[in-house]
Length: 230
Image (cartoon, rainbow, N blue to C red; front, side, top):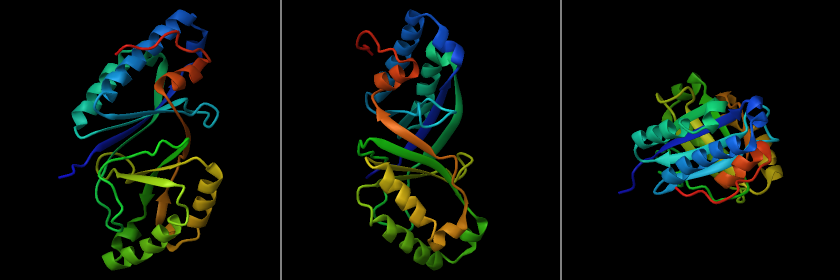
């Protein structure tokens, strides 16, 4: 029987002083960071994304998933021991879980990114008035929302739930190779009835898919000299 998963979106920001360190010191820190990622990725989902050039307050995002919350906790403990993390802050962090949707049979019990070039991520909160509606009314309203999304088959949606786990209620992640298509979808979603029940859907992150090594190289423009051995 499929099991639900914990999902963690971790955004990192490097201190400017880190880029002024000697190159070998920066490289050692990146190697330790990459080794921790490789260890977790052996048996769990881990994807890296660069936000250099798309956000001013983050540089890198890690998407991790595991059936056991302790494993995500352990990964971040090990990650924090890397030299790179001594110069990094975590301005945004979203914890969620997967679960079956009330409104669609297409929901997933695990996040399954399709490895498109871009991932658009944001936390999402509905108004209390939404939850006061009768279940059948919420279902009716959401069918318009879902139907509109199906008009954009090149955009893949992964939704996870944060009720009681974190400040938001949902974390949504849209994956596509075409940012213009995503922009058009979001603009059209603003016209739906369900949009009137949105309390918060920011900040929004435009994330560029990359290997861990490539995302680390984007931090200072320096490529790791050799492959990392976990």
